[in-house]
Image 1 (cartoon, rainbow, N blue to C red):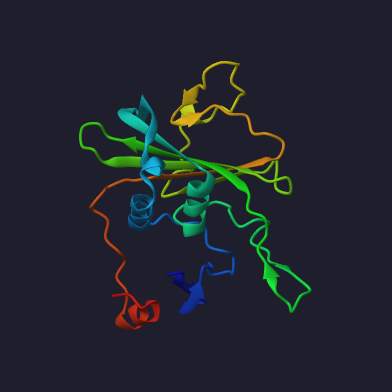
Image 2: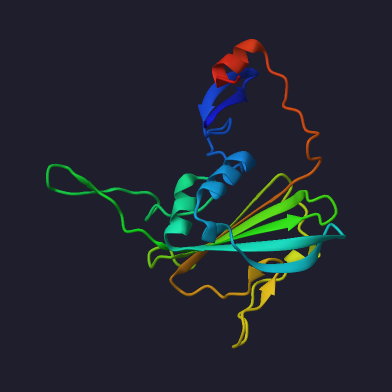
Length: 217
């Protein structure tokens, strides 16, 4: 729930979405929360629109892609299950003059792709990636890349090529994403996380007083 502990000068201190030095904590995927949100969305949001065969760390994998637009994409962004916009100009509230009433900023137009890299033998999820195109004249031309759990440190050769505008004709897909050149009024946010040692990870041990501070159960 955003409650964290940071070790500062040898002592544990409470933080909320902040690292030890006060820097905002990077987005961390909660797989269970993400899947719960996805299951609650309309069936069209879970529809697989593209399938391809690929490789991940030299091993074959199946790549499944979903596409969310309109209210579905906004709902996913609002849920916080994946990093993304949806809050207008950075979530700023425009204050009106009539009794200090706040007005919602205009909602952007979102187009989000969810990509699942699956081990065809075991069915394990090896990688999850998401890309959101946000159409917003005030935020156009911005490209952000976020990685977690080793997703950015070891960039694979097949991921290093920059996006190129596809030639006219059918949409071309590459590693789960359509090859689309962003428009001038679009910003792009890409997120990727790799899963390793599934089912073998153990949480760090904490003293009872620290678990109490985190409200861990």
